[in-house]
Image (cartoon, one colour):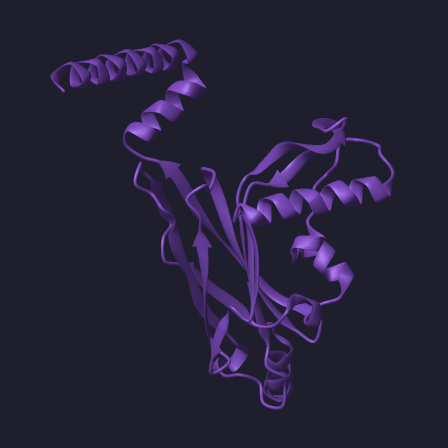
Length: 254
């Protein structure tokens, strides 16, 4: 027994040194409600890095933190415009099965300095590493062209964002980052993934869920459109008639 206790006492520091750190993440809002006046929101992602022994290992390089916020996947059809006889018409197209409806990545340093291309592809770290799952069997060059077009369109709409140096790390333990949720954000279950990276390796990862949903009258209209097309149509007709009658009433009073 004494020998076993001695071995444990001698090897416990080595076991602690080999143990991996743990991420304890959180978000400022687990639920975001979209109403008619919704103009966007700032989502704060923060947390702590728990190291074995309760302190940052001495002599090791500081770790980096990457935060990725993803929306639900969706099927997207991308069409390429071509000018024929002075008129823009649809030309080639490509469909993607599972493109994220929203994607934002924030990191303490540019992601290209943290991991290699293989690791980026595995964890989908960066806009150029998204797994878009194309349906067509077009040549790789054509798929890459349409993929860049999809990312460009989403980026211009504020739905795909890449923000290097946006994660702040305090004392090597506490971290925080802000991600802007645009007004045109889709609804659904979002995920906030946090990665701890050192020397090109992902040491730890953690996920938190975020629900973005419509509220009030917007929620009623959205549910009616999804679950009851007849009710949705009657509501649209009633609104049109009501607005038309009100506009006529105002015109007669002027």
